[in-house]
Image 1 (cartoon, rainbow, N blue to C red):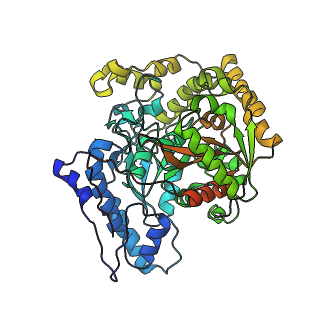
Image 2 (spheres, one colour):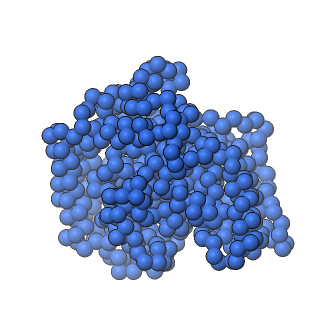
Image 3 (cartoon, rainbow, N blue to C red):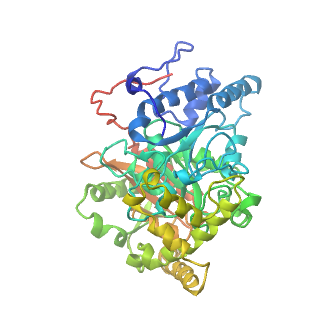
Length: 522
């Protein structure tokens, strides 16, 4: 856990200003585009931006517990970016050049940072190389600010026992909007840090909701790409057929700029990235950021996803209002659709997902651990033993590790696991895919997080955009999901919706500072 002195909590109230050419620019809620403009106009340096975020982290992290480690080389990386900007002609540097990024603590970096899944079991282990997406970030000139906390081991250690956003190394993460609110997980720190303006953007990973859910609950944009569009090489796995690396940001455009930098073929994740490379459009994804992106789009609404569970809630009422906005912006709403076998699809224990994940995790994580250069643990069995032998560090008595133990008891993919995979394929084909194809939909749209299970079964992409706040101030989003390779359509839809509504606001609650009205600027 990052330790700071108590007086630093008041630093959030300070006005941080860099005066240049008589202008001050707001840092809070700054976007990649606005930052790059400030860089170009010499009103801001990458070093100043990094220093701002470090101050934010020092002030906020003792309560939010979103950042697990800070990169001691972040400021030097920012200095290098500033020097490159001075020596290289304008326009030749990419969108991420000099931009600070936080990484979920399952994404490997070959530097001074640990990669531990939030557990002490992997503390001090060393990786052979950067993860594939990290290599692409470095090539784009991004500054690796540090590692974000998460629900330990993706909440796969003890499902249903350990709370969302808790891990042994950082403790309990907190929703920046409502202290008692669920931050969701497992990419909790990645979402909390972006929501609280502790970094520009972050990377998360998703197997079943781990980007989309925390983004929804923390009023940020979460972009889960098609499985294989981004490399999983060097990322601690859960279930590779469903694992994907995505982006969490405050705006759709920021997510798209990061996506453009991290997609593409990786020989260390050859099969998946080669298959998905065909979906990457010539000219990249930013070309689909259009305010007219909703015109003519066919958006499906499957009410058996959410009608019963959300009826009478503010989320339901707000969703109906948003459907009207989508219509006004030119979308065609195909309503009252029905996903077959919805109760089975949304229940991982019945859909076959849990069965496949238990076997797949053991196989995949053992391979990851064996390939580490040095590590105190080399197998899932070693991890289980470490957690058992370190009950105080890992809160073993409180949370246990029953899911790990169940996974360790598996022995590869036998008939049971093969039937589970077949069941998932059938449920996806006869449910979400059938509805999308038969109705010629560009996307399915739903309130909150109810569509996550649909997208998990087939490795489908989805993007959630802030949609509102309930009567307690708890955020919720609207999700747009599509078939594999539908990212261009989802970007058009999500960006146009965002620009038409502009709902997101930064957290007003922080440390019970009721009169927090200061304006951080540069």
